[in-house]
Length: 420
Image 1 (spheres, rainbow, N blue to C red):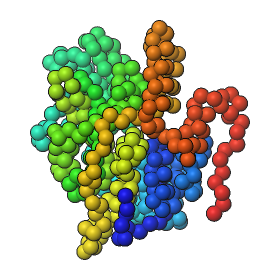
Image 2 (cartoon, one colour):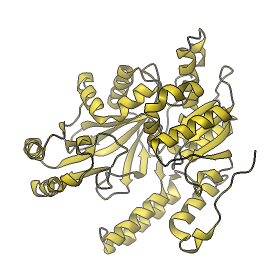
Image 3 (cartoon, helix red, strand yellow):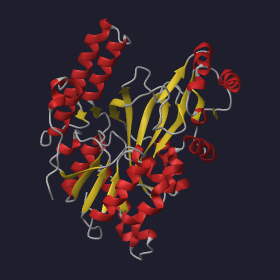
Image 4 (cartoon, one colour):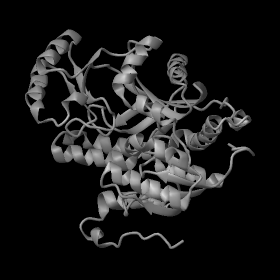
């Protein structure tokens, strides 16, 4: 994929160290950008990638300190682009967007659109107006009202936050299969610091389908669909650790384009649905206004969402500036197909989830051998989400930190970037 003569190569601050960050660094480094990693963890893994030219450690103590630290860096270092990988960083920047936005080209949708997408209540209000199916839901009012609505919806029901980055009792969502279990949760609700952000929703059966998208002014330019096969939670509410590419669904693609058109979306993102293959039922789950954590799969298959994000960011900046030739910066629609049936696997996350289940007694020992065999098979036959033979250190270091370094590994010195 070529950025074309109208897009300036330069320095890009890649903000946030997540499992998909190394894919961004590799994509942009190979394209000719100088990649600066911005992170809070001095022992992070992506800093070891050969595609990372420099590392900047920001103050993450509070949202205000983070934004002040970022503003100072942008004013002093003047990177050409900021590629915000994580949802946490995007959320923290929303109140400070007016003062941050003029300082670089931002590789994310405009901040107003980001705020709309990240608020589940806003999206749940929008999707029915577009003819997109969703499950009944309600905001938190009081415990008695929730009990009544749960009975009307029918069990099971799901409780989650309106913001996908926030958890409920350390989980992305909680599934309640009967009134007794919901009552126990509601009885302890007085201890919740922010009950007003809780949502109750009818449970939707099916598997999660992640629809990776790139759009300009609402028009889809690229689409890739993958199905999550397993997550790091036994009830499938967690982070995907294994999945497979599937043929594009015309219906899901149409739903995605209806959303991007309604939002006049420009940028890359991921729209999630639950699909019940037995009944054909579909339910909207959420719209993540950022690159999906499994972007390594389409990247390996020829659809480079990080690079598309750079192109769209340059186009959006030029359009907002009123440049007459802004449309020349638009990338060509990705017309080439991709092969379905290609799997991805995140061995580090899968192994950690398996060990956690064993420690907490949630995993049955008699099924351990089958679980390990499945992990081995997936690792040998799938694209790994972080590992590449010509850039192995980030993944090896992640395994070292996760499974091997304690207790003596803590004595290792902190990483210090080379002087510039």
